[in-house]
Length: 316
Image 1 (spheres, rainbow, N blue to C red):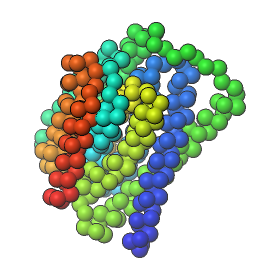
Image 2 (image 1 turned 180 degrees about the vertical axis):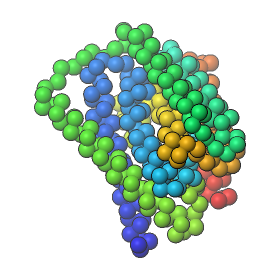
Image 3 (image 1 turned 90 degrees about the vertical axis):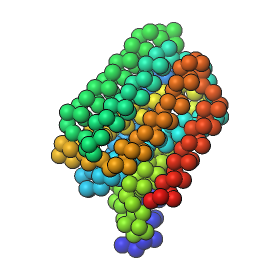
C-alpha cells in the first residue's frame, strides 16, 4: 500500500475516533444525567468508561495482531497524556475546589493501582493472577463512586423528563458513536503499525505518543467542553476514572487476550510507568493537601509531559 494512502487512512482513523468518541460521550452523558447522578460520579464512571473505549479497543486489537509494544504503550501513554496534557490544560485554564469529599481515596486508588502494576511488571510480563488483582482495584474505585452517590443526595441533579423522540435520538447517537470508535480504532492500529515500519519509528514510540494522544482525544474533547461550560468536576472525574480503567482493565484484558501473559518492555517499567506515577502525584497530592487544584499544577504537568515526549523523540 502506498505510504500516502496509509497516512490518509491513519488520519481517517483519528477523525473517526474523535467523532465517535464525542458522539458516544454526548449520548452517554445525556443518558446518565437523566438518572440524577452527581457530575463528578458521571465523569468518573459513565463518561470515563465511554472515553476509554478507544484505548481499550486499540490495545486489544494491537495485542491480537501481535503488536504488543503498541498495546502497552497506548495504555500507559494514554494515562500520561490524560494527566500531563489534558488535566494539565484543565488545571491551567480552570483550577477549582475539590467538590468530592472522597477524591483523596479515589486518587489513592489510582496511584496505588499504578504502583502495583509497576511491581507486577518488574519481571517484564503481566500474568493472569496479577491482572485479576489489578481489576480488583477497579472494583474498589466503583465501590467508592457508589458510596459517593449515596452520600451526595444534596448534589444530585434534578431528573429531567424526556420525550420518546429525544430518548430514541440519543440511543441512536450512542450506537453510532460506538461504531465510530471501533472503525477508528481499526484504522488507527493497522495504519499506525504500517507507518511505524515504513518510516523506521519504533512501535512503542507510536503507541506512547501519536496513538496514545489520538485515543485520548475523547477525554480532551470532554475536558474542553467541561471548561467551556465551567464544569471542572466532570473533567477531573473523567480523567481520574479513565486512568484507573486504563491501568486496571485495559492491561488486564490485553493479558487475557495474549494468552495469559503480556510482555512488557524494560522502557515501560523503567521510564513510562514511573513518569505516569510522577504525574499522578503532582496532580493528586497538592490538591488533597490544599483541598483545591492550583494553576501551577497545570503548568508543571504540561512541562513534565512535554519534557517526556521530547526525550522519547530524541532517544528513539
